[in-house]
Image 1 (spheres, rainbow, N blue to C red):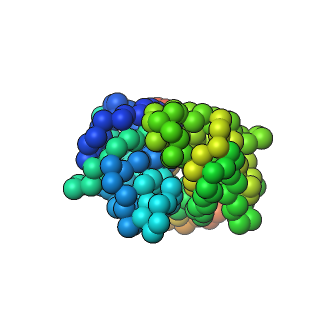
Image 2 (spheres, rainbow, N blue to C red):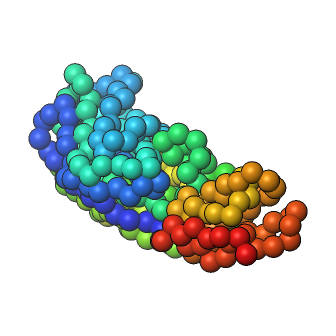
Length: 288
């Protein structure tokens, strides 16, 4: 099935603080949640720190980060991307906490992708590859991904700008990309974008020359069907697609998304055990 995107929330804040709480979001179950942010620190950093990202009953895990806007060997800015996934997430705010490190400015974008592979932990299988890049005094940036593993996989691009002269930089997505968020404030501006198909050259253009960094990812689509091995029986629990019983085994392809209809035939007995078992009524059918 095709991957789709939902923009959940975005914002920016120029308050000096060590943590930031976003607006409340309501993530859907088994969707890839992407939390991207650009931070300008109050003091330059030898290495940009790793924050904790919490909320929604989800374990958010860092996908990639990139330090930029250097002065000497230190950096003023960092761009970050975190991922998460849960079967039953809760509504609520997301907290980005840098501990003892003070932010000067932060801009953030939270979005989700449905139709992704739900394997692994916290969306680990849904993110196939992640690449970063940056450029000094540039008005555009391209992040180059390796060849995609499937034509069904989608592309995500996340760009941030620092050294903006206390003026927000706006971003224009590359050709074929759709904007998710474009927001910012002094010293930290972001532009996030995506497309439902493959693109190995992920690019964005800023409104003026700036210090720009980017993260690009390949997002893995869910398979067209999932394979369950169960014993056949005279009843089917259609809500989870499980076929239970005590006699014959068979591998049954089940549409992972709609579960609109499940037709199971017994290899041993050559008869229909169940037909038109739908996910919405979780009906149990008796063998004919």
